Structures are given as structure tokens and as C-alpha cells.
Image 1 (tube, one colour):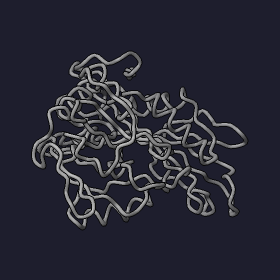
Image 2 (spheres, rainbow, N blue to C red):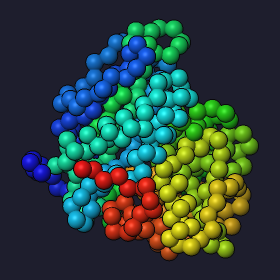
Image 3 (cartoon, rainbow, N blue to C red):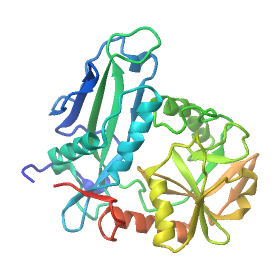
Image 4 (tube, rainbow, N blue to C red):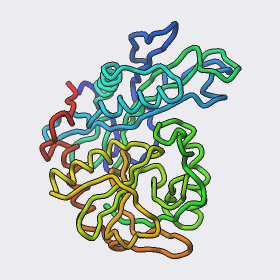
Length: 341
């Protein structure tokens, strides 16, 4: 690296830090421009931009990992690109091609290589791609122009003091509507989750469990993450629903459970009143990979899975295997790893 940065890698949190360069491309007159790297982390746009008034925006989250050998790699970045295309399509924004998405991420990582944490710290370089509607528009309609950007920042290991279970409570609020935007990673879904999250935190829980919006009988998501459970007959199960955001991490865990742990794995309904069928449970997503669930409060009663203080053996093995793949210590399935060169 031609540049060094003075960062306490072992004590990074999950908070914004300005890095050197970010990628920005603009869509106008029916096409995206070639995009470029810029130093400025401020975006100047019209006060009438669609993103402000009608919420036309979506985003992604992924990480760059430093391997034991010092290489840098991205994990299943093509899946993030395809999910962003799905999000853009759902709210009438122009799609970014998979190639442009991957190239933008690669450029940003290479330009900020000094900020990729060393192997062994548990820290990573977090990338935040996003698309927003801009330009002058005041009626409810798609924006006339768009911005696609990718910025990055180093983030610490999500668990300070190691992997540990936390408790959740079932929310009375819905995360998404039937046939709504639940499967798209759009900003409005997250704005709607702020109040239920705060209510759960005020009651001493890590976050809330959202049930399916149609019947309120089935688990859908855990805060901003996907849910999974381990059944008494050692199956990996995770909810399947058109209003769940299709997590890249969950998709990977389904394959890890089958191919690395030899488990049966499936997407199916997980009923809130049948928690006794599960011996372990967790939430999964990019930031934490896996958050072990100690217990879930439902109708005033806390159902405890494996333990409120210890991580279940299958959950731990899933976490160690997937992070081992991400950091290059365990051989990955074909097509999962993208080397930054």
C-alpha cells in the first residue's frame, strides 16, 4: 500500500468514517455515464429531488475482507448487484448493470486499500452502494435523473467480547405490507422500522421480531436481518415469503448448512406459536453475519432456545464456517469470491 492510516483496528465500531475516494455515476437522458472516483463526500442535489419527497432510493451493504496472505476479496458481490437491480425495478429506477456495480465496488476498494483492516482483527471494509432519484420533479412520478454511488469505511467486529446471544420481542407493528416493498432494499422500509426498534430497545430487548403482515402467525424478519432456526431433527430452516428481504448472508448459510455441515436446509413457514420445534435460532445479515437469539418474547412469555448466555453449537459452526470462507481460510464454493486486483 502506498498510504498508511493510523487506525486502532482492534477497537473499531460500526460508525461512519470518511475514506479517501468514493464512486459516483449519474443517469440522465436514458443512460448511465461511465462514473468516476471523487474525493468529496458531499452530494449537492435539487431541493425537489424525488429522494426527499417520495422516497425513491435503495441501497446495498457488503464487505471487503483481508485474507491471511494479505489479499483482498469481496463476497458474492454479484448477488448484491442483482438484488439492487430488483430494488431499482420495484420503485421505477434505472438498473445498474452487474458489471458496473462490481466494477464500482472494485474501484472503491482499490482506491481505499489502506483502510482495509488487517487479517486477524475481525474488522472489514464495509461498502455502501446506493441509488437515489434526483432532479427537479414535484409531482408523484419517477425522477428525471439518478445518482449511483459507492462509498466505504472500515468497521470493527460486530460482537465486542465475542459471539453472544441476545433476546428479541415480537412487534405489534408490521415491517412490510402484503405485496408491498418488503423484498426490496428501499429506504422507506428502514424508516418504518425505527419506531418498533426503539420500543423494543426501551423494553430491554436487542430488537424486535416482525410477523407476516397478512396473518401475524409466522416469523418473517428480525429487525433488519433475516431469521433462521435449527430444528430438533437438525434441519436449518428459514422463513420463505414474498415480503422478506432476500439476504445474501441467508442464501449463503442455506448452502453452508447443506454442503459444509451436512444438514438438510429449507425455506418454509416458521410459526410463532411453535417455537418449541427449534433448539437454536439466529438473525443473519451482512453486518453481524449471525446474531444468536437467546430467546423470543411473545404474548408476555419469553421462549428460550439453546441458552440466554451460550451460543448453540450449530449456530457457532455456521458462523465460523461462513466467516472462514469470507476471510479466505476455508475454500469457497465456485463463484462466491471476487478477488480485488
